[in-house]
Length: 286
Image (cartoon, rainbow, N blue to C red):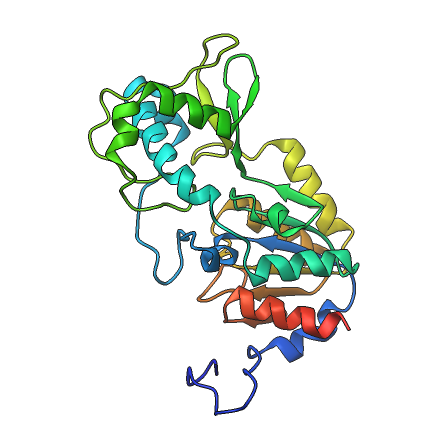
């Protein structure tokens, strides 16, 4: 399929994303990769700010800790989203990055996504700056739990809710919109009885320092920064972009639509991440 007309001539190969040829010499060394929600849209997970994204106001950390009604709404929606979220499979973009890392072209992936699909695709060095929906932690004692075990507890305590069936729109952070959940039983910590929270960075929270230090180390030891599927609207991405700019290493941005990094990028590729990363793999891995 052509990126300009949407249709490839009969019998001809698909056209490569415009700008890839110019980017290839810049990506000849070790690449640090920063990924956002756009990398996972081909796996059926929506993004926050893409062209087709539905505007929404995610729950803030201040709301979550303020009282049970907010936690009921969050955990009910999170349970519905979890079953669909966890069933998602890596797409060609995830697999291309895993193969590029195995071949020595990528030194690691910093991801703003919480879906775990990079690990599922086989990538080894991953910094999940916004956490992962696969883990749950206690805000009081710090105990961590597997998300699957929390889902089982929710099912046991809320049979009426489970029987009602999955509904609502799946959101990028793994929850879904719900109706009346005033009778929903929220799971608590089995160690101390404290408040449980998915190990993800909520709106209003800061990225843990140790995660950002690890992400920064990837950029510091790379020859180029590749941004894939992120509009760079959040501070963690902008800080890494600025680090690359100050080091004067090439910055290549792949995203459908504008990003906050377009002005400093050596090359901007306005195309989907799956096709672009697959094409990059084909060029770099003989």
